[in-house]
Length: 328
Image 1: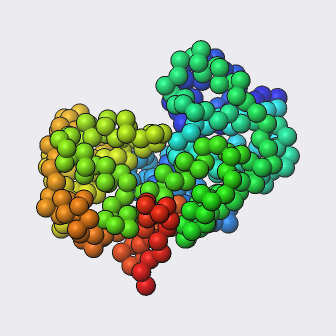
Image 2: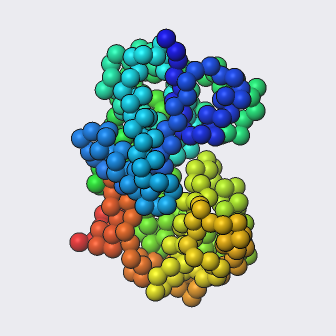
């Protein structure tokens, strides 16, 4: 019987192969911090929703994504054929959400639990040298009942239509998954601010432009340096720039091209990345908390199982670290 490693994506898998780490590698690939992750009866239903969303965002062909997810889901249902299963995930929000989903699935498969191990990496797998990556193997520990129970509770909370249970995790002991607490907080910071209607990422973008960081490429590099545990890829980040520059009342202006596409021709990509961005008057007043960004924007965004709209906008009160219910 062979062993299986479940990890975040293709770059991590490539590094593991370079380090000559034994075992079949299963890449989870889903960007769970973006788009709908609602409560569903089955994994197949959720995978279909996720594939449709990722294709809608232009991040791949719908049929190819569905096929990749189908193969992935078939493997996760067939763990009995592996002598050992190792979950190998990083400390950032991207990985922690994937880890919650995988542990939740394992919790429903008692036959596999005794052969499951976890490596919780506090650094980026894709940035490690082969020697350092092999040292991660010393961190491997059996998956515990406490980890499974916490993951089930957290994954259910993340997919709920209200973020209240997810926010409540900040009050509980989450040490069984030592990187979960920071990930929960980082996700909550992507809800619109109670003061400005801006998310943490949007606030960073406006402040960076205000202090003289003007091109999309420079902004993304500065954002990665700012993050305690970088988790947003460039595609997601540039989509946020496009959102801030769109609509009848944009907060920034100066993009030299149509909205960013991962399939841009080289010339279009270079033009986009070289754009010189500035704040609009609304961007300035919103940043100063004199205007509410949501009042001027059409909001239609999913964060886990929460669907944010102008009429139902949960907000994050960063000062008091609490979620604020929509005004009825």
